[in-house]
Length: 87
Image 1 (cartoon, one colour):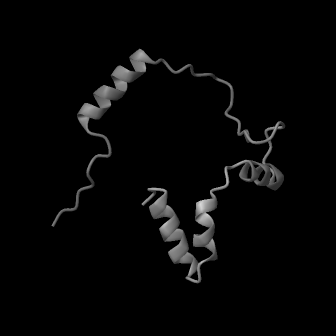
Image 2 (tube, helix red, strand yellow):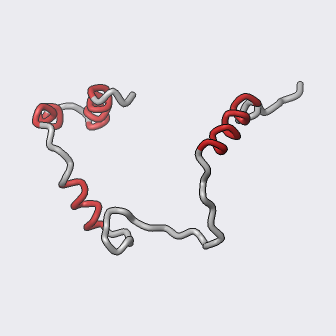
């Protein structure tokens, strides 16, 4: 029995990618890549910048009863994902 790995990209998708690259050219640079954290002015990661970004998220008061409900955390997270249409 021979096992074959299916191709990740079909021929039609390759052509679509080629067509897209002709429509929207991507400028490439010879400069080395760099990593930058967009949540801080310095571009460096910090717990403080994550915390500040999370604090700016809107509060959803209708979810408060869910988090206070006497049920396992994994069930609360499941219901939260269900309500946010993230399943």
